[in-house]
Length: 329
Ligand code: SF4
Image 1 (cartoon, helix red, strand yellow):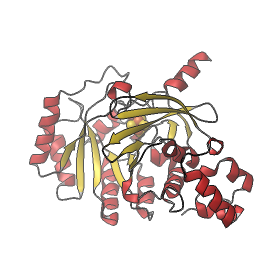
Image 2 (cartoon, protein in one colour; image 1 turned 180 degrees about the vertical axis):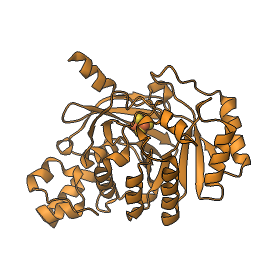
Image 3 (cartoon, rainbow, N blue to C red; image 1 turned 30 degrees about the vertical axis):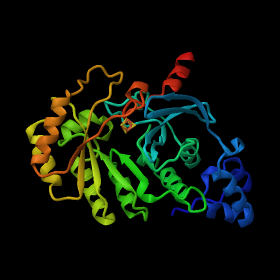
Image 4 (spheres, rainbow, N blue to C red; image 1 turned 90 degrees about the vertical axis):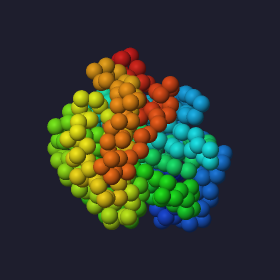
């Protein structure tokens, strides 16, 4: 684990969710750290320890979207998807995003700032329900906030606190190659999802414009290397865009890369955003594409979107409040 410069007791007491038990103990002593950690992770929690607050909650039958206000009056969104035995939290890692995927609302106004480890951890703490999966799939590209993401994962896994199992943590990324290499070397064994969305460089450049500096082959190679080293099935997310990434040659290329590998392709449906130029595929087009991939011998799934009606589905998390603030200026 990376060693950060030692914090002061005041910094720890002002924002305690940003530290592991060990980091805390080294600065304020074991007894105080134990007492504080117990206070932080028992329910109900003390508001005085929080640096983010709930601004608004939207609810549908199985999904809740939380709008959180940060100390600097910025806003982020976090989604909770209910399951029979608990639920999944979709956590944000940045305010805004620099990647600019054409199907996503989060990056429409560009990147604002990285979230701190504490702001990342508190998104989970503030969901007062049983959480058994954490997915870093909310606003922002998690690997562009690498150090804070890894620090937050260590805090979430800390056995003195939430003691969250590594198996239940997924990082979803567009796959910046250098950061993927670093992640491969971490002793974390978290689940990895790569937002691939294309089988050619040209199509990927069109769908994820600000990732053009990374060769698609290198992204695939690094992800497969992660899968091998950690013995993990890597999921490749593929948002189907008719006329852009659904040709027979795309299917052949995906089969060439992934046949016989520990990989699953997740075919995704476009959830409506403000980009009116995108045509969402019909259900039959999705099913046909999935079927053709399966015929090549690949493992394929088609994810059902949750929370569309409250704009909480993939690609729909927006800086609505940040935008409103900007317009007021
Ligand atoms: S999908 Fe992820 S990486 Fe792409 S713009 Fe949205 S938040 Fe950023």
